[in-house]
Structure formats: C-alpha cells, structure tokens
Length: 138
Image 1 (cartoon, rainbow, N blue to C red):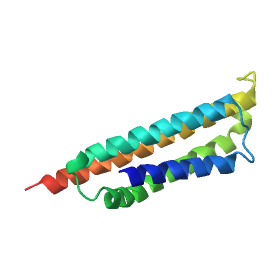
Image 2: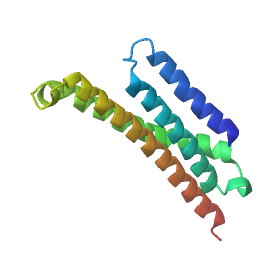
Image 3: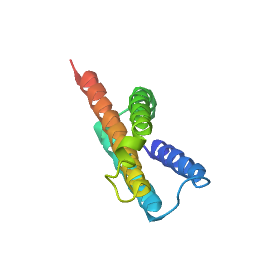
C-alpha cells in the first residue's frame, strides 16, 4: 500500500507543481492541494482496507488494473464537464449572476477537482470490493 500511496501522492504533487507556473496561486490553491492530499491518503487507505487489509493479496496489481477504468471514466466526465463549462462560460458566469465571475469560476473549478478526485477513489474502492467478493465466492 505504501508504494501505491507514494505513487499517488507523487503524481498529485507533480501535477500541482506544473500548475504553479500558470495557475492562480492563492489560499484556495493551497487549500485545494491540502484537501486533495487528504483525499488521496484516505482513498488509498480505504482501497487497501477493501482489498482485505494486511490479509489481502496483490494490492498493487489490482490498484493498477482498477485505476485505468476508474481513471478513464473520471477523465471522460471531467472533460465533458470542462467542455460544458467552457461553452456556457458567457451565459452562466458572465450573465450577471455572480458579482465576481473569476472567483465563481475558481470555486467551480475547486469543487470539480475535489469532486472528481472523490469519485475516482470511490470507484477504486468499489472495484476492490467487487474483486474481493469475486475472490471469496465459492
């Protein structure tokens, strides 16, 4: 589990380091990073638990195999969400509903990133539970 956790955190941090060059770096940015680190640690722990904890076998192999379909599903919906947000930018955010459209866009982005990360880990844990039930079936 430690290797998968370290890998997941490394990917997360590497992604955010690349965003530092162009992203708006403010308190929300650092708060989002902290929240995502907590989600990764908690998600990895729950996935390890769903695999049977220290009695489970093949955690890394299963995590890698399950992360592809979960990641693809989240990526497709994330892309669709981003596309819808891009298309509706002027009508939704610039239509006068928000006093500060840029702040609203930042909050929507924050909520989406956190939500998609929670969904990814939920899919992974759910996949581990399905595999575990299959392995324990007579």
